[in-house]
Length: 185
Image 1 (cartoon, rainbow, N blue to C red):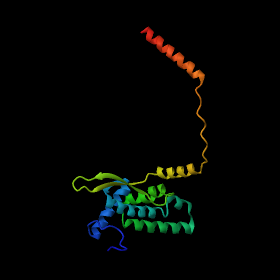
Image 2: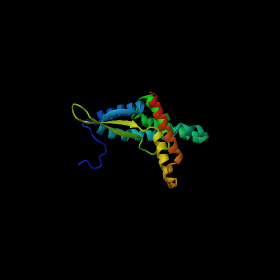
Image 3: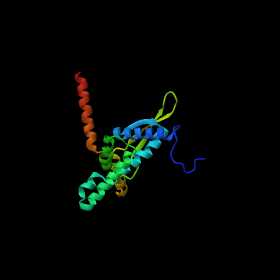
Image 4: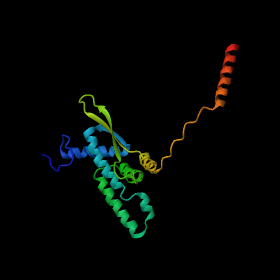
């Protein structure tokens, strides 16, 4: 029994598995979306969310507002977070995206930075395939809109307007013009 053993083995040894996830998480951070099997996608989601959370520890916007000892401490925390991320991501562009673009994009969001979308089954071995993608920035705005709608008091709907007699007269005029047009042809 695998009590207290987190993670899936995926039929490979630990070094192969770590190398595969390093490549996958790097590709996800660079491209924003990758296609893989369902079990790999679920494991990748755990790693990607942790890395983005590390990137959010000291975002660039916070560094700009600090001075003195606070700035030195924040820079040291940022360097430490970068070193922790480098254990999983070895591409400089991906690290820049994590600590600049994604840290700002997900600043207000607490976890759940990735989404899995089912694609169907892979031909050949019939493995369930998924797309792993980073949530767009607009989704955090949608969450705020939902909260605002819940707080707004609901106004009772007005009764429907009755048919105005003037509209009936206009309808008669349009029918008369249509009849004249047919008569001229």
